[in-house]
Length: 376
Ligand SMILES: *Cc1c(COP(=O)(O)O)cnc(C)c1O
Image 1 (cartoon, rainbow, N blue to C red):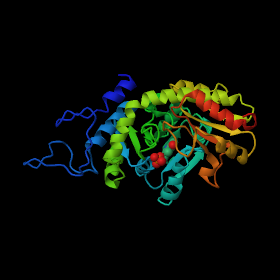
Image 2 (cartoon, rainbow, N blue to C red):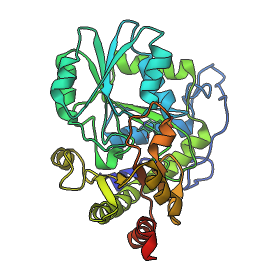
Image 3 (cartoon, protein in one colour):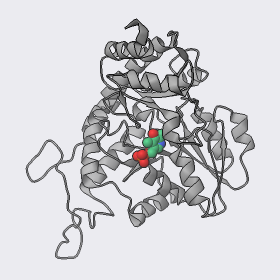
Image 4 (cartoon, protein in one colour):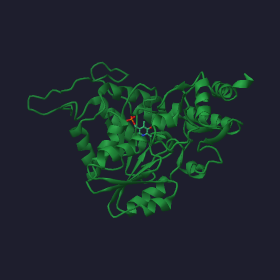
C-alpha cells in the first residue's frame, strides 16, 4: 500500500458496538475480566495499553516500516525512555546541532546517572568515526538538523554504528516517514515529536519511538514505557490518528511551498543565506536527494545585518505567526537564538520558518513586504 492509503486504512478502529466510522475514544483506565479471570479484549489497565494507543502505535509502525511503535506523552519523554535502556558507563554520540532538548537531557539527567556523550558535526563522517569509543552504545542522528538544516548520511552512519556494536537512532520529526524512512536505511529505532507534523495542527503534545525489530532493545524500552508511565493519553492518540490521515497530503504540500519560499529568499538582496536542503547550493543537497522524497517544510534564513535586523523582519510579518515549534498548518517564524538562550551557537541573524498550508504566493508577498519595508 502507498503511504496515503496506509494512513487512512491503518488508523481505523473497528467498532463492534455501533459500527462507527470515526474511531471511538476509549477513556476507560480499566478493562473487564471474564468469569474465568482472563481479559478477552487484551487490555487490563490504561498505563499498559488502551485501544486508541494500540491503534496509533500500529499506524506509526506501519508508516515507518517498523516492527512496533510506542507512544509517549511528549517527544522528550520518548527520548528519555529510550536513553533509560542504556547503562551507566555507556557513551552516546550526537550532532552538534541536535534539537536542544536532546543534549539537555543527556547533560542534566543522564550525565549524573553515568552516561557520557560527544557532540560532533554529523556532516563529517570522519569526525563521527573518531569519536567512537569502546563503550559507545548509541549514535543519535537528526536530519535535517535544527536550525541549520544540515543533512546527515543516515545509511553511512547506521553502518558505522553497527560496526562499532552500537545502536543507531534517528530523530525523524522534521522529515516524517512520508519523506524519509530511517529504518529502511539501517537505523534500529526512529524517534518522533508527534507534536509536530504527525499531529499537524499545533494542538497535541506527544512523542513516539518506532523499532525496526523485536528483541531485547525493544522489549526493554516497551517495559520502561509502561513502567515509567509517560504514555500518550487516549484523546492525544485519537487526535494523532486523525492527524495521520492527512499527513501525506500536508507534508507534500507544505514541502512544495517551502521550496518556493527558499527560492524566493535565496535571490533576495536583504538575505545573507538560506538553509534549505532543496536548494542546489545546499551542501547536503545530494544526500538529501538520495534519502528524502521531498526536502521538508522547514527552512532557516539569515538576514543581512545583526540580530536586530532579523528581529525587525520577524516583527513586520503579518501572515506568519511569531512562535516557536513547527509542523502545524499555520506558518511560523522565530528568532531562533532568542529561544535557545544565552548558550545558543545559532547565528544571531537567523530566522527559522515552519511552512504551513497557506498559499505560497501569499506567504511570499508577506516576506517581501517584511524584507523591503521601504518599497511598500
Ligand atoms: C520538538 C522536537 C523535539 C521534542 O519534542 P516535544 O514533543 O517538544 O517533547 C525533539 N526533536 C525535534 C527535532 C523537535 O522538533
